[in-house]
Image (cartoon, rainbow, N blue to C red; front, side, top):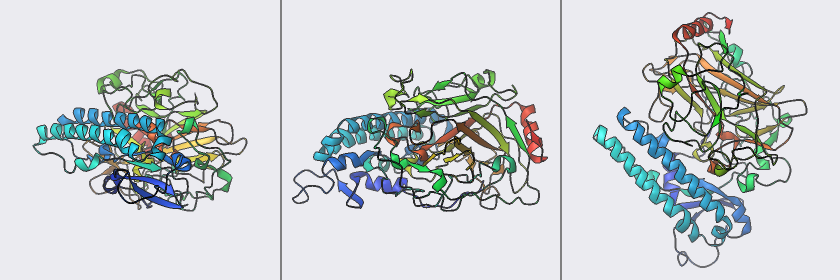
Length: 506
């Protein structure tokens, strides 16, 4: 529903400009160090970030997200473009591995970052971007503008001082601003204003888990220290107040894979992290619409063959899963025991501003941003809380829940559709969140809004994390959800009727 205003950490443009700098936290501030300069340039003395402490602070690689930047790609060019974008994700993963293996050496020798990591990565990205340009030009006659500006990447530090989206205490709840505790029944936008980050100083003394790949103690906060920050929405006359709940289980049968058929169709391990799946059991990187239409479903109502998926949550308890040596698992630095949710609720709700219209079959929606740690929070939509405390939502912290309370992940998907497309080049612009007044932007129409609530019974305290791209360091802000609508026509009519008629249906 309505989008909550908040400060953005970075944009594609300013990250491209900063591609020649390694961003390192040092001396109490953010220091930009030119890693392209030779050892003999720029005067005498050691760089201010040199030393073992800086090796700990240099945490990851930050690259402009070409997938989000490419908003207008002809349909016939999309398969090739999507393959190149997936290849660029693999390039970052490989470069991050090179960086992690050399972290302390890079701290002692800044030129090594350019020679061993950033330079080779930039060359590979330049080649992929050129192939993207050729693919688009072949169909459209013109190349997308400024592809070259997306090639360069930089080193960056973890946000250990509380800088970055949401850690300033604005309590934003992601792109949609849905109230996940009341929105499932009220069907409206609860823009999470307030100071809901607590003190944000983390818990305990532990460093990064997963052999330096995160999360850190500072990524967790005691939910009882967070102030309530969820505002209940106000329905307007004519609001669609009903709900439709579909029961598709909790992935008890353990369907996992590291694919993403929406963002990286036709590419194995396109996500570089493992997903939980409920609903359609035919879903993998190579699933066509026909495959999904004929796939078996875990949903109780077999008229719903939709695909619902999200990154798995792991307990980092030293227990290895059988994917410890597999893509998406240990090979992509996702380790620990995968947790089966104790509860999954999939609910479709209405609009506070009027009636909803049916979703088109095979509509694809991604909510949240798997790369929000490096992209900034423009597309972030993570909401973390605890049972009994769901009036307190965290955007970029994991909650530490008291004894007897369980961890809750909530996703409120985009609720406006452009009326034409089931997908778009960047998988975002064909859908939108409602404005602050609850109305859809011009050119969009309201559809039933999917609200997911996923609950986990994990031990209190730090020790769990979502799977992520390796360079995203398992940050909570990177949480995201994916949905492909495969309701049959009769059941979708029932969904719309229930929502618009103010009924609670299953």
